[in-house]
Image (cartoon, rainbow, N blue to C red; front, side, top):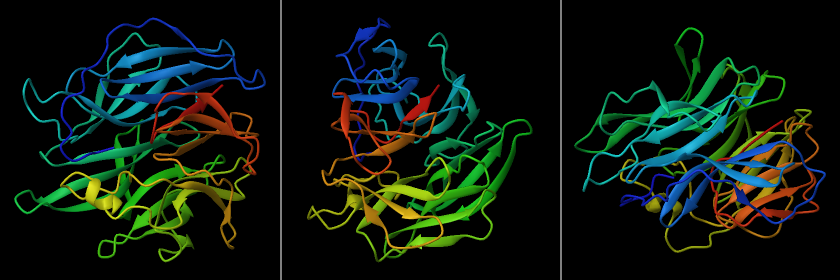
Length: 328
């Protein structure tokens, strides 16, 4: 998240493995998440078979890790990251795009650097073949007046080619077969959010959930067979302050601070249906490698459930919002 007035995070050091309570042994693979604690932020890996959590990257004092996504083969992690601006300087969360090896023995490597002070990269995600990185990108028009343009883009890693796919698009995710893209389209005037599906290169966008349906929505992703889109949504206003007002001065709809629940809608079109009833803040979902379950992170912990919304189980009681990856 890019929060207004974000000041330095004091980070605890060390890389020791931390044991967690025993969980459902039917779940396997690795969950990657960003731990969010009052005095610590860290990129973590939860080995579900070994039932242990390992820090991979401790975010330095006054730095900020906004979002991350693990590559399909689990070898590296894309991060939108803002290094410390210096001692006693304010951390505004103006982030660049980095890559980090997932072995826990390296430091982030700069992939795409900001060219303006108020420029921001956020919401990275990979194509299933690992060839493309999708992300949202804010570029200032006039830094004095905080005017900007926001685009959904993708980067071809082999060539460095950047393609602009949509204007005002955030929260991109690609279908498991690599053919389709989903994202949230933000209206610049009303700030309302619509759920869109398009071809992987952004062509032929179709609105599946109109802006009038929810207060806001975010974090969409495809089911394993590509037939459904899951997303987190706020069905009714639960706060006198809008989620937009809680963001940094650059008006980036990178996250909201309202409790939301999980929904799904057919990719072919239809009425959204609710999956969960308990609302949580900062939800972000990830399919299991076999496509039979999905996990989601939130400020109240990391959970796993069945694709129909049943059998919700708490995996970790650790605040970990807005990013989650599940690899073999």
